[in-house]
Length: 178
Length: 263
Image 1 (cartoon, rainbow over the protein chains, first blue to last red):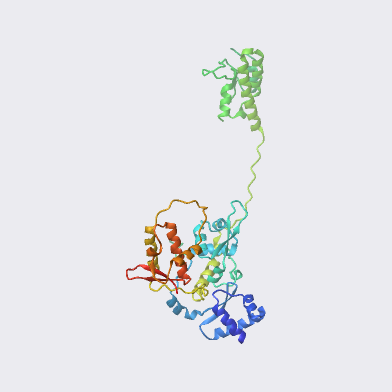
Image 2: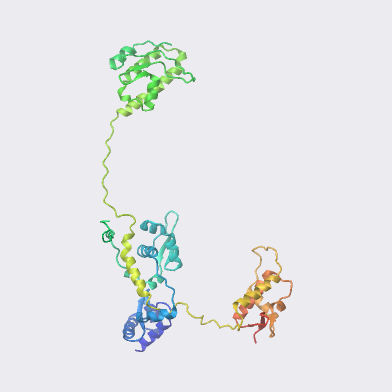
């Protein structure tokens, strides 16, 4: 129980996800022991209190439970950072095809994506990750840890598989008759 | 010059009835024209020069005009020609060569166009429809994530940074004091970029020497004349000393900022 409490204290003071290795070293434990202790902590936090333990962006972090979201939002008044449809499209393409150039994103979307790429860079959801060794040596883009964190993902393998079929034509009721 | 040969007979043997008639070899513009060899066939009647022009402009189908009688007429013309007719002979040879080559090419069999293979239908472009599921999932996760609050990164002051006290003095007061100081500075000339640079730490020592326990305004601290560069160095040094807790600052009743060495 002492290890669990120590881990809780350690997670309480961190402002970013902590990996098993990062926790294991100062506590002189194996990663397996830390993982077991975190499972106990997870259960304990779920059973009571306002905090929960989540696995996010490749590590573990404490956060508030969704039940308290309204009260916290009213207190903190956070700036809403919801992404537009076009930004989400650019982000999804980069997430699946990374590393990818902007020209390749344009090709997939059929429209220019310079605003989207620039905006995602400013939001630190994507990053430049070297240059492609082709004519013009364009920048390659990948997603960041911030992307994983903002979308509550632990790693990229959590992304759903891509649809393979053709798009379904959305016809409104009576649309064909009119 | 009149040309009377057996072309009539040769031509008649093919298609034409009238072999030739006399024409001027040099046109009115002085351009050398082919000799007056008259061609007559069911599909074309005219001089060799006219035939050449019409073929080149694709007005006559060369396949319908026999070239053998024309070539024979040309040979006969050569036999009867004099040295003075070399230009005409050359023009006729060029025209005939062109016609023969064109006819030879047109007699070659033409390969039938190969029917294009139907390529398998590709996905419509753009292919961003593949990402619909992903975008929907990301939207859902984003909504879920918005209901979870984490400790914000880099929140709070640096634990290793000492808090500094500037009392009732605001940043705007300091900015006004700096602005006032700059108005009294002299404008110095442009200096080369690679000149030796002073460091703020050196200037901080100068400022500390000038300061005492008694509060003084910037006017009292810095003696005239001073340049704008010196004013900037002075002010930055004072700010750094305030941050380090070595200088105290206060606001007078006249809204003037004063500085003193910390005890």
